[in-house]
Length: 448
Image (cartoon, rainbow, N blue to C red):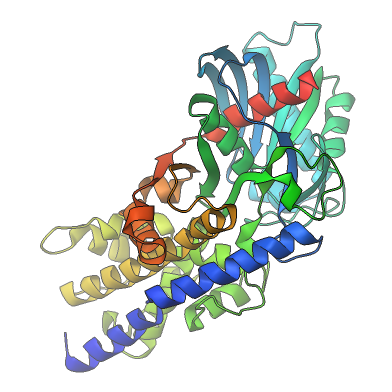
């Protein structure tokens, strides 16, 4: 690597470096914003009461259906709760096309109803004359008005269906079921983080938080409702709060956004929204890295100044490529070379080029994990749980598959809260938790 290259690459990497001191400032601001959200409607972090009160015991029993909509796939599940924290689940995935994601909401609801219908037919559960109770995991910001009613605030994660924002999404889907004579009642609308928390708590009742860290990012936790000024219901209970914390700091007070983040944000479909999510979630990390690569190409410090049509396309550099590059330990970084040359059609790459790309991926990935720890530190600080045993149930491909993501989060948590407090916090992978969680919440709702 030439001296000029080294200087240029270091400058880019520095733009992604977040000091421990900055992390502490972010956590302090996060706690302030949480408290605003609990105090009044319309705060940046919405802090939405989920209407899911009380904790699981693990002894609950029964059969329920669950839907999970929130990314590339729709999952339809049939869950049987067996008690003693055990369950069985039958499920089927259906691909949601780009056309459905951005077309009329009615088309999306009809598609979901058709999937439920074919699932019931295939699994022999369509013959039952009893109404089937269903939990609907809808992983977008919804202002809930009861356990099975909620108005869509805004779309995220690449969805943008017309005729949905400001409407009750449960009623829209229930109408599709009714039109198609499907004997299913939506008993609960569930945020995926709330579902993840409840699913993990079915087996581990001491679970503190549910977090989604995949394509998108959000979290939920148990709150003492006497602390929630805006809540007009029963103040003497605990309830799960859906934080919608991906929206944190859209005022740009503390998040260390750089030129590569700004370019990605400007070209996203929800400009100036979900800024925290855009710095930590899988949907965005590849694009941020691509912007940094193009900057070095433009300065003639990468790929001999040559890009490709593929690399020039927005969102073409996937976060999954970063995972592959980060674990590439071969002498010539051959897997990295394969992605750059065969997948992205870069004319040719040297070993130095591949090393630079690997450094960029690492810088963006480490920053995401460090920033992602801040909301956990914020919740523990706000609830007075710093230094107590806590389980944080995390679902999502980023946490599950991105190299060292959990370790880097843990190191950042130790930097902010201290090693002693960090040792009390356990990150557990809660795979596909939202389906099971939605079924558990449907059961709670049906009982009520």
